[in-house]
Length: 80
Image 1 (spheres, rainbow, N blue to C red):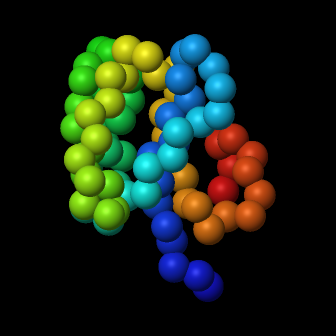
Image 2: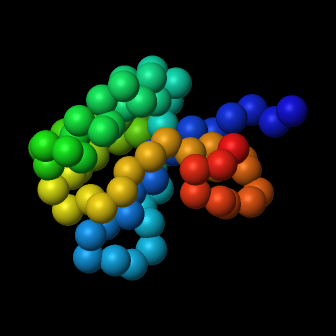
């Protein structure tokens, strides 16, 4: 089985292609528990990407956000 490659997937309210940010295991754990709160409150949060970049995200512009595995070949929202 291939190693998982977790990523934060953001669908912006304005539309367009989703934004994907590769994540570390630690950042994945932090975001998994706080992500729904960020979207509900529309807060601005900094995330640390796998390549050690820091990205500020304004969640008030995000329609949907979730953690996904970039290794999966098929994409069906909500199914693993």
